Image (cartoon, rainbow, N blue to C red; front, side, top):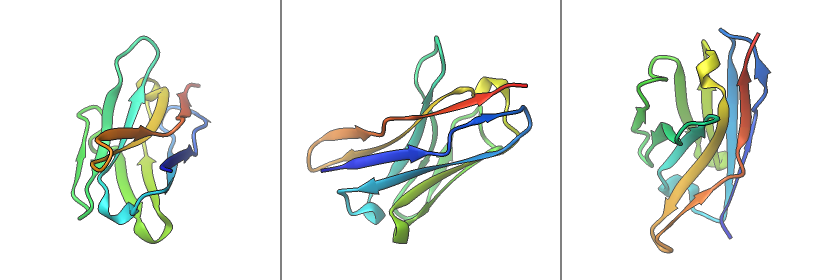
Length: 117
């Protein structure tokens, strides 16, 4: 059974930082491409960042230079370091992966990030 559990969301002031974590189980984590998505109120879900099994990364335009995705394969954990946060970053952040064997995406329950003074 695949499980993705996010944590680390919080209320933070503009300009502040947060680190999100996503603990994975039920998959051979080191082999999987992992992604962070977010959904802000009234907006479409958008890709925040993605990291492949070999460590290649890509980012959504709105977070480039501010966010960093990383992984610790020994801990089966995905991270998202978020710096210089803006009010527009307020959203629920989800960890996700595609499992080819079952031809489907798996999603975590999400963690709320609120950027406000």
